Length: 199
Image (cartoon, rainbow, N blue to C red; front, top):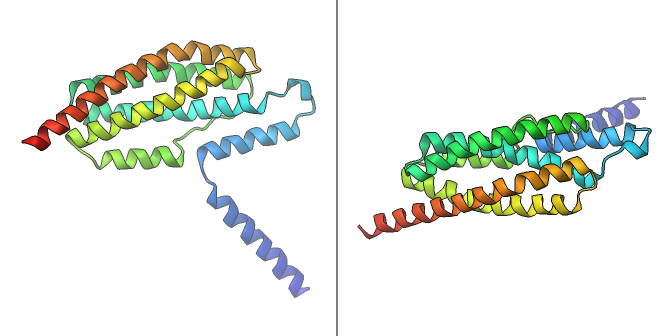
């Protein structure tokens, strides 16, 4: 009897430890969506898994753009970096609201807070000042938007759900514009840094 009790107790502790490891907003949203798929009885109404994953990732990415944009508007030294941050907050907030409504309609659970990577990026940026902040932030924004464009193009071409496909198509021109702006501000931040080093 004692042995059986101890085995059961160890199993509970092990499960609790595993649960704590993946306490991340994106993985929590994905788990909730997987559970819904298991619970659903009408297979015809179920969304394509890739469509669902795109919505979850897009929501997480949009939230990160807004949070880091606020930081850039506050901490950026170059005028172009501050303006870019302000632009991110304004445009991604609108896109996020649209995506939130779409997710509710499709019964997709989306993250309600920044994921681990985004939190880490924000913490790193908060420690930087002036030109160092500008350079790190803009370099990250160029990389992020290249990745976003690739994911949104994939959804625009391959999404099974017509409304998710339409959302991706609609967002692409905005993301391409953001990439161009990011590249200009990134070049200026790098040029400023080079000039400073020469002095």
